[in-house]
Length: 328
Image (cartoon, rainbow, N blue to C red; front, side, top):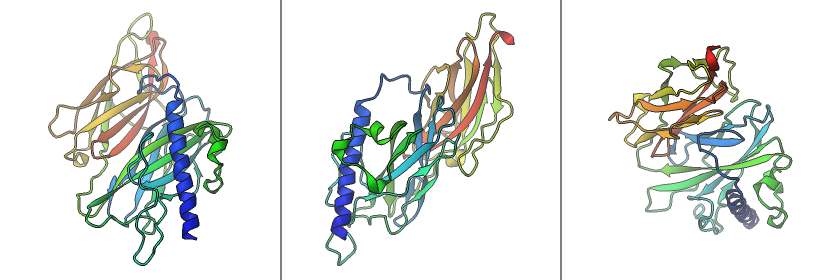
């Protein structure tokens, strides 16, 4: 039974490598990182970002599908023991040592059920690292790295993880996502016995054109709560929007750790003067400044501020903004 389980896990590991490298190698011409014009993943969060052996963390993925017209996004999660990036060598595929007295190794992958994100939602929550699936940290070492692999399928269908086709039948992730658009994202996690546990940096506020604006709240199922009025910028020019809008954000001081923080910006229209912002403030709380140039004709857009730190912490806030051209 253990041998059979390991064979299936190893086979799936090879498939994941194939899919990831295939997805990266076949990307279209890259647009600006901050411009969201099609189905995109912007961030993956682990909360908390580091855990003790046997503890639990929660994974969330921030994605946007601006032209999807509310289509369902199906998400599959895999957990790989070890660091992994597309094109890199896989960890030892013979597995990691199991419990004392067990000769066969534990599988490298845990494959949970597929799940569908709520229509209109930008996050899906799944608990991981239950005690029975966390590999124990190797003797003499303080921590174990793990990688969460996220498969997303918009408007199509992923097969059950127990029914993955043979590699020879696939040309890449897009073919695995039948009838839709497929994406893949990675998140590195740390399981540690003694190192201090970090927390995710939290966005405290955002000023849009020198006025503090409120984010779109997230409900428990990832749905975006209805916001009656967007945050409006009225362009003063007589021939459309030509001026940039100043934006600055602040982090909750209590969530800023010793690692340097920065904010990545994303928007569904117009463009930023920079894709990410740092701060000169010694506390790390901010401000994190950027300017946004609306499309000349104006319009309504989604804006995301994603806070990161170099220890792997991440969180985000979503906003609706509008630029009104010609003052009317």
